[in-house]
Amino acid sequence: MIPNVPGFTPVDPKTNEPLKPVDPTDPGKGYVPPTPEDSGVDTPIPYVQNGNVVVNYVTEDGTVIKNPVKDETECTCW
Image (cartoon, rainbow, N blue to C red; front, side):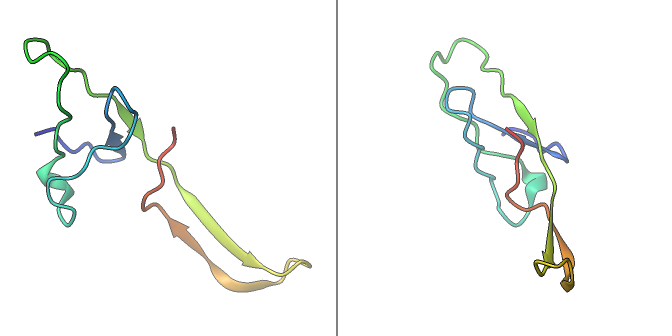
């Protein structure tokens, strides 16, 4: 198991794709490790810092039409 590190997402070192969580509803259970190329050698797993996105809903003249929404889900800084 690859451990969960809050604020970071582990990625496959070959593809840079995020690893799949063991249990999507509980990130504390960690991630499924990638298949190593050589089973006799350690495979370092890079972690990428998660990003933040704030969505502002305004008209062209700047009038706010909805309160800003902070979205951290599925946002990763590559």
